[in-house]
Image 1 (spheres, rainbow, N blue to C red):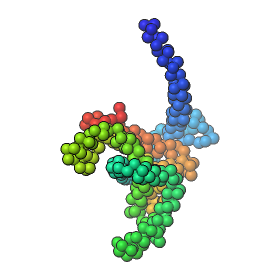
Image 2: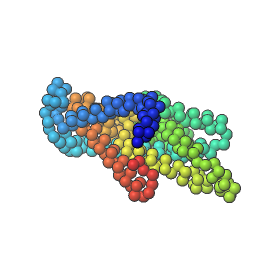
Image 3: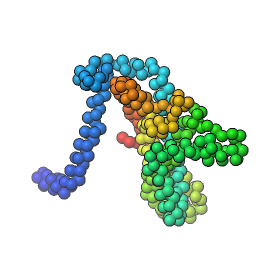
Image 4: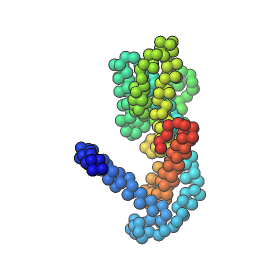
Length: 306
């Protein structure tokens, strides 16, 4: 028994630097991620900055009742969910496809160049990205010029004035910006697949598509499932910057998201309680989606988070 204790403390002393850094990050998480959750109490109060959390009037669920009786908030939920699903489907699928296609490039030099170029948009701010989109999709932009020259349309389209295009523009922007970056983890998973499997399949006469179907995709299946569950939980994180920057009065009915609603009521209208209630709703739905997705994965025997 004493020998076990000595070994344990010896291991602790040996790993003391790692433990210290771990403790620092745990404390950081508690201070900046968990302690601020105490502010959620504002959702049940008629919060006033002058009176503070302890002395503001308690109103129970009145703020939540107002939210779900507000037609604007219902539209905001619809917009957020629709754009979140589009972002999930397109960015998720495109990242997998891009990683597989990139892995099929045999020239390492070419692969590195393509890989590096694909990462670059991730590091651009949304201000720059939306500026590029405005220029490319304006009435005299390259998109309209191509469509007119190819006789697909007769006259330029004002994409940012027609609500039916807005969700697709947001989805396209997210795909262009994040596909290369999101593909990194799939590329890492692909490189962990035993190369002898590909060699054996090639000897047996399997082509590239067959190797992708029967070796690559099954090899990264667990990674795909875990990331899918995590991304499902982020469906309501459809974005703020791109919608706020691309939105205008003509497309406001389809561009406002929950985050913009929180900004409008919590900051602009000084109704911090209503903004907090909307944020709580978003967090609760995100947690519920993760739990449901994880439960489905567990029942179907797929890889899951817990």
